[in-house]
Amino acid sequence: MPKNRITVLAPFDVVEIIAAIGRETGQFSFCVDAYSDSREIVDLFHRHRASSDAFLIGGPLAYDYLMEKMAGSPDLASVSVGYIPYDETAIFRALFEMARVRPNIDLEAMRLSIDHPAGEHIRECVEEINLGVANTFSKECISADDVADLASFHVDLWKQQKITAALTSVHFVYERLRELSVPVHRIHPSKSAIRTALTSLEERLQEKLVQDQQIAMVAIRFADAGELRVSDDVRRIVDRRRLLIEKRLDEIARRFSGVMQWASPIEANILTTRRYIELQAFTGITAQILCGLRQDFGVDLAVVVGIADAANEALALARSILDQRDFDPNKGIWVVDIDGVVQHSFESDVSLRYESRSTDPDLVEKAKLAKIGIGTVNRVFAFAESQRSGQFTARQLANWMSVTPRSARRIISRLEKNGLLEKCGAQQSFGRGRPVQLFRKVHD
Image 1 (tube, rainbow, N blue to C red):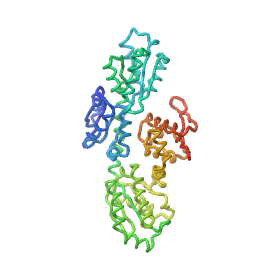
Image 2 (cartoon, helix red, strand yellow; image 1 turned 180 degrees about the vertical axis):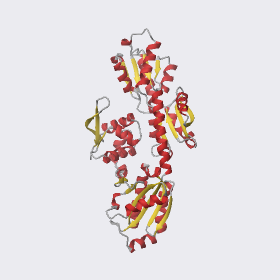
Image 3 (cartoon, rainbow, N blue to C red; image 1 turned 90 degrees about the horizontal axis):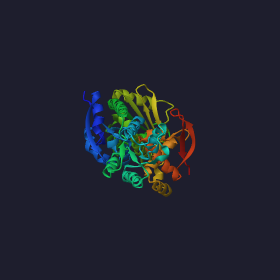
Image 4 (spheres, one colour; image 1 turned 180 degrees about the horizontal axis):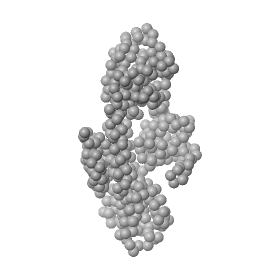
């Protein structure tokens, strides 16, 4: 059985370390490529996409940049992508190295400039070892586009003699400060963080393998508008407009590498795999096309997806739901798994609720002021609406949008400043015991 092909994209000074740790397991086939500037990550991704099953990115800054620039891309959606965070071990090691190479310096008098994406963790570590917290200067790197400003932040403080050393987790900044003879120490990812990231990526690859192997059968049954009943009128409409309807259904099938066929005069089936069904884009695109069928041809339809190890089993599952008396076709797209349990019920797919608002001048203007794309704003609103209480945390949003918690906090902060989100309380965290802030959408 061929090994999973993982491409490691990381800064020059850590890429081989990551690959070496990965090769210890013997479960992967590795390809490596390096960058200095995180903005190179998109070109590197395209270079290796065709020969890769997964990507491991050497830090959160490049990962966020890739997610931002390729949001919605099928190339990105079709592979697993992970990143290596900067944990406390990496930070303490950098601080220890700083003290080791400068043994005669008074730690209490040391003045540091530190930066994100690991900045908050750095500050916590500095506090824990009583390293002159009052003499530290910190700056967050919001985007890979801001790394030049981040380098200037350290250089200016050094020229003003406000610091004795700089601490950075950004390779580009580290190299730039070294060129200017600024005393700088680099935070490298720890081996434990690398192993954890690789383990997580392996689990995602195994899950993807299961998804690729399982069959999904989309059963689309036409009926009278507003009810799950088939009349002669429906049959005549479908038969008369069959070529046009078939063209729409073929469009769905092509988008998700499926095959469409007619099972009866009023039922069409699309054969695909579980992975495509579980992509967020499936429900959104499919719902749009099916909605167009309803509007253009005046017939209603019910859609159920069956998932099983064989096509006939998957289709039987889907039809068992369609044939239930209490089945409501207005609930959108249903998915039923191999055990006959309904996994999902997409009630009018939340991602479509704000589609019409994408051209709202006020919303577009606020998104522009927040320096966030209208698509991202719509996704955040959709997520907020999908929560029963309408409240969510930054980490919950990060998991849903497949971005880092730092990136989610940045998005929330910008939307909050421009009146699109608001704080609505806090919930207790069981990690450090600190309350976690809750947010909600500001209703018009």
